[in-house]
Amino acid sequence: MKIGTFSFEEYIEKVISFHGSVAPGMIAGGFMVDLARTNLPPGEFFDVICEASHCLPDAVQILTPCTIGNGWLKIVPTGRFAVIFFEKHTGAGTRVFMDPEKLEKWSEIKSWFFRIIPKHQQDSALLVSQLQEAGNSIYSIEQVTVKERFITKIVKETPAIILCPSCGEAYPENFGVPCPACAGNGPCE
Amino acid sequence: MKIGTFSFEEYIEKVISFHGSVAPGMIAGGFMVDLARTNLPPGEFFDVICEASHCLPDAVQILTPCTIGNGWLKIVPTGRFAVIFFEKHTGAGTRVFMDPEKLEKWSEIKSWFFRIIPKHQQDSALLVSQLQEAGNSIYSIEQVTVKERFITKIVKETPAIILCPSCGEAYPENFGVPCPACAGNGPCE
Picture 1: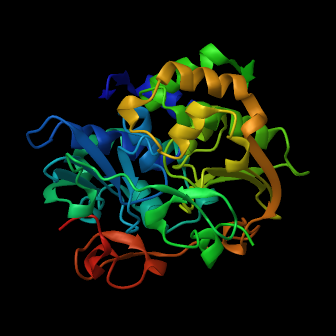
Picture 2: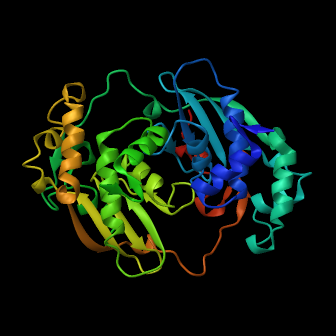
């Protein structure tokens, strides 16, 4: 069994080194990323969107050239455990999601995914082995088109950098005046 | 010169392997992450917030255990080129930002940071050498407290997972009904 170019064991090593622990979502994420990549629509350049902010983005960052900081991976948090690979100039994409209807025969996966039993009562070994055994069978694939704002334009307008009249720091002018932090939307008190 | 536990050259190798290219923001990000980490307030467990969504998050992911998928790194896009390391239970943090006032003597850094000349006219070699030579001197540090919502609570309530009545996929109930995608806020058409 391979995940990307890695053996399952090599992938697990990468997960521990990058993500910190072998979270079940990272194993599922590995299968999902692989499934999306092998079912791509035609095209040359693909970007990725994750609909979940936990685990899935790290599977993408381990298995593809797309990272959150190089702009080829975006997170649009709908809460659904789904990943979309799409051609960046057309928006045509392949969406892979954990399919609730396919979980009936996998008791431990279902318990984990639906949070039926608390995390500390999960049987981690059984969960990992069920995720391995289930392989690609618990996910579904659909063809989608992403919204216009995610499609890369050939000619891109780059906003000017201005100084915020309030904090004096630099930021792109399309964020408005004052900067979002001084407008009350920053991370700090 | 070291960035984290890496020599400058080792860091550049990591950047190419993970981020794909030696973007100037990745070099600046390396210094900024280092500066934040060596000026932390007292505490044991630190989370990170990036105020810029490009480059900086990848410097964090290369140099710390914090990733976007394990939840220890968050992006709050204010447009400002700043990173915050904060104690996860108190919210006390150290914020490092690119300081416009300190860029006067670095012509190529200033041109890049303020987008004064188009990217293809930049002198990349000069820019990289100025960023190296400037070292920590072009950033400023301030002590901050992050907003309540970023602070990790000891007892965390985990929302139940429900099925969306519209798409049938699973998601946390605190996202509302129907799920954000079916409410029009998903990534796809």
